[in-house]
Amino acid sequence: MIIRVQSPEGVKRITATKRETVATFLKKVAKEFGFRNNGFSVYTNRNRTGEITAAQNKSLNLLKIKHGDMLFLYPSSPAGSSSETMDTSVSQNSRPGGAPQVVEDEIDQYLIKQDGKIYRNRDQQLLVMGSPAVRKCTVGTALALENISCKIKSGCEGHPPWPEGICTKCQPSAITLNRQKYRHVDNIMFENHTIADRFLDFWRKTGNQHLGYLYGRYTEHKDIPLGIRAEVAAIYEPPQIGTQNSLEILEDPKAEVVDEIAAKLGLRKVGWIFTDLVSEDTRKGTVRYSRNKDTYFLSAEECITAGNFQNQQPNICRLSPDGHFGSKFVTVVATGGPDNQVHFEGYQVSNQCMALVRDECLLPCRDAPELGYAKESSSEQYVPDVFYKDIDKFGNEITQLARPLPVEYLIIDITTTFPKDPVYTFSISQNPFPIENRDVLGETQDFHSLATYLSQNTSSIFLDIISDFHLLLFLVTNEVMPLRDSISLLLEAVRTKNEELAQTWKKSEQWATIEQLCSTVGVPLPGLQEYGAMGGSSHAVAAAMWPCQHCTFMNQPGTDHCEMCSLPRS
Image 1 (tube, rainbow, N blue to C red):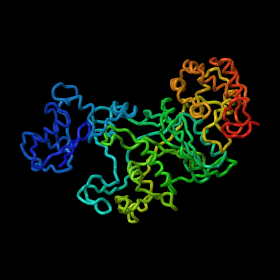
Image 2 (cartoon, rainbow, N blue to C red):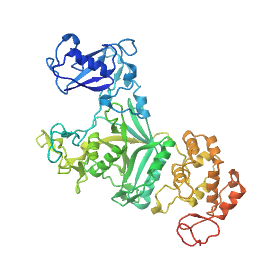
Image 3 (cartoon, rainbow, N blue to C red):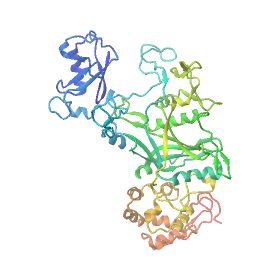
Image 4 (cartoon, rainbow, N blue to C red):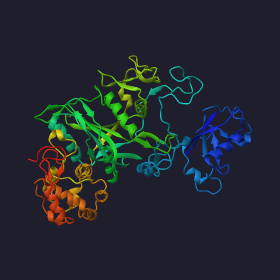
């Protein structure tokens, strides 16, 4: 049988037999947890009652310890004492259930070192003595965090595989949906209003819905003890097809490069955002208030999409046997609020929803967006029963089969805010560089738009000009002269806001070539001769090259047709 033993370092599973003596079992516990001596105590209850000692000289069966029971281990001496403490070489790497060695997010590494206390002033009228601090119980404290699985366990040889056979050992447990009582992220904050306004411009100009990925960082949310905030510094808009009531995400060949550039800028993908906006009165600038308690906050299809994204971005966790638990990836909806103005609402879906989506057990309902549907088992797939609890018309709590199920059981609400004092990871310009994948608006990223941007931004500080997330992506991903292998110094300058580093990169041959390509499109650049690294020969060669008016490809001199698209030069 297997006995679970929980300690401050996590949970381990100890294999034992019913007739095994307590002394033999405790030796196994000491070896598994890395204790040199018997510097620990094991109890049957969490409140340190029902101690199990080797002096009892009884079998586990006589102590009524059976398969699957949880025992609780506490070190007998404080951390740092010499003889009766855990072996540090083991304790530092101890992980529950043989979890793989993982490196947690920086914010998690920081928060785990905090005391997690909620401090309050002592009330003189209270008679209760004690410390003026309340400890916040956090997910993962001395717990093994196990992920939900809806799949049949592999390796069961006692019967034919599904659908011919199944047993209680390999059968996944039924799931009763509960509203998740904790959050992996406590707040979403856009650094400034410009980020959101530029994203909303697409809907304002077309009336079609739009989608983007949020890039930023996870930081401490100081308003909540041990809280985590997702700070949004930029929005990347992938290839997509949007209409007034639908969105389709297309394959993005640049997705890997975008993540790579963001990482070098100290950013990561923290969530996604989409619009659900319908204009109500164009004269007043109001929008329809459509998402509320009487309709839905997230549709089942949106919950499934969010669950898919969260599964792609798991939360690395050393307390989980799988090395990950839940996700910090957030969902933001730009929609109408009660005042008929645009509001940003933040959400996540629960770990239960993530499991149902990952194992392909959840479907949307065609005619009821607020309802999902748990799949039924078939010869190709076994699906465990999914239930949820509801209140009937008589006020009694009843258990319902999740066919269909209200998706509010799957949703976690997260506050979305803007700071009182705006923050700017990237510079803000009156004439910003175009956002990627907006060709439908006539806003294209090419060397003509780059030349226009440079001509309109005459700041003497080069770092201010170049600190634009969309511009940096263009420099790396353009087809004429991609700078993926030579832009690291510039990205470091932007990340650290180091003008000296930016000036060093500005004198490189790569930037000189970029400027020469811009000069060939007929837009004069101010101070072109200042940007050193240009030699006379390279200037002459670049000037002789000509860009195609149709595809912007840079052609060699002496040709009358574009080498890329074969269209005539004029």
